[in-house]
Length: 132
Image (cartoon, rainbow, N blue to C red; front, side, top):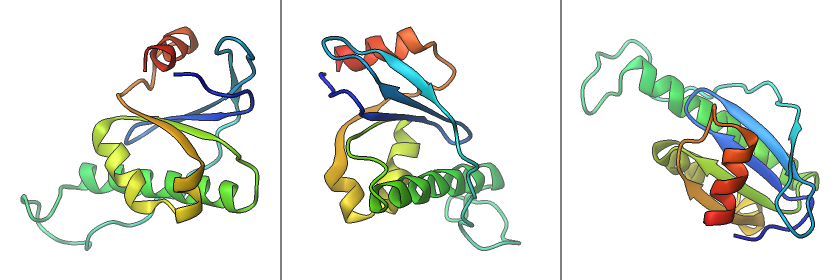
């Protein structure tokens, strides 16, 4: 996958967010960006017993984190802080992110990679982008 310079790369799972900006022109060169505080959105009803119909607390926390990330990305897109966005997320997290994206955010997504790469090195993330 080829991404333009200035593309924001968000690497997300149910607990962590890492942000990078592509500063390369011919190749992908990722530079770390500061990670904002993520306000988790509540998911599900409190006090319920876990079952397949009622996710456990860990699942609710992961979904809430993903929705909080979607809120941050939506805000940046709507305030023109992000022109191009590439999202790399664990498959379940990717599904939650998609549910929370504003239509303008969807329009600025230049690519998605459904793979958990949080905790991987910058070189490994860049390699995954190039292979996609």
